[in-house]
Picture 1 (cartoon, rainbow, N blue to C red):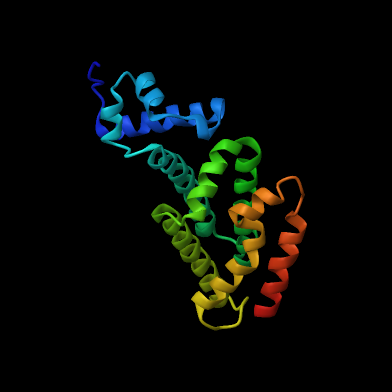
Picture 2 (cartoon, helix red, strand yellow):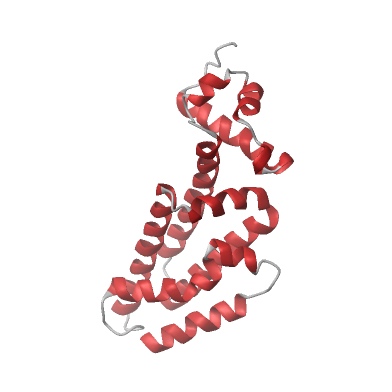
Length: 196
């Protein structure tokens, strides 16, 4: 097959884009690396040099989405406004982004859910990013005396644990046809009140 003239990074990006289209059209179980390579105009052996199997390609799809999600959350953390409101918005954003994915992109969400279940390295990176973001918000709230002074990482973990019923991949999918935002807000507000 002809050479693509693309860099390794460009090949990976193009493969991810094609995989996303294939997942949406056929369902993620029916996507084959051979078909992705054929659409790219390269041999499947060439594609295997970038993705050892279709699971690795699916992981790249999920990782791309999580990186964008984390970037949006980072922007929120840096906003100059009340940290308590930012904490509530952080949870609402995370819930909404996952809910939107499960409802509008169910095949891609299935791949993400499988990766989360297996606790892949990029999932661990996302969880670490969540903790860093929440610790930053908690630090800000403590500095403004909105939360009592205590171990920042512990408070961040308490909040993340309280919000897990609304942000964990399995639970978001399980309750995807329910409007749980008000319950999420009430839950986080109750925890914040206890910490205040």
